Image 1: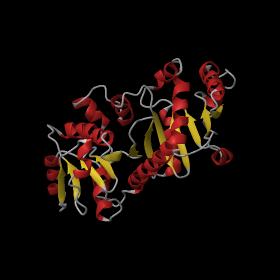
Image 2: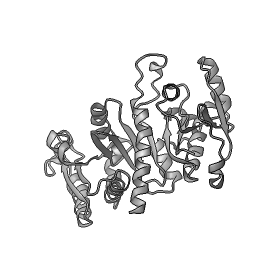
Image 3: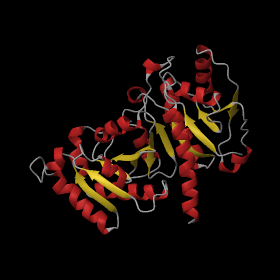
Image 4: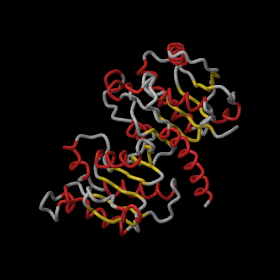
Length: 328
């Protein structure tokens, strides 16, 4: 059987499902399992006038993986019962993760969801895909890695309030552990033999030697010293507004920013919605498109499939790299 990729349903009212179906119809992707309550999917297909052939999959045990009745030419669906659209979205994450852990799927694409709906109706502590999979995978640290063929960017902190960023990076070993694990992922998952990393400062102009904030001196520089003592090739902190100059783009493999929007704004500008959100330091391979549910783009010609298709390609690339590095 071909190497299967798992795909979570996300918000079925968003553009993710349309991109998936259109990509499949045009033969851009073929070997995947979609995780959704079939009753929910069937209602969506009828409402949207989609006529698709569906094959329902039931077995999830690792020893049964070779006996899964996967059928080419049909959309293969692992179905389960849900009590609401949000419940369907949330359970999709759980079953997708289990299929990867049981080596039935080589990796997981998570279609965009509405966090506010999950928080309101399912889990008030839900903050995002990255944190969810970090928790379910029992990892203290994970890395949000934003990948494009031109650039790799990673924020140290993700979905937290700005006022809590300093408190977070002040935690003992936080910066060290995050970048140490990032370095491992760059080597193991992306097959970069000796990653060159550069990190921004938190404050404007990287604090100007303490004139505009002390975080660079108190937290970032001591962590970089420790990282260098552990043979991590890292420079900085440098001003976030000039870190992505041409000479740096040519000389560094990964650009680390301190908080979410410092990283996401330049990444989306450079990648133009062709990029992939990858979660490093997990036991599974998990990717997600770098766009949201985009209700306003439904049924328009303004939807790009590039980010989704790049998620599919990156899973296969990382899977091969992990196999190769495991042998090495």
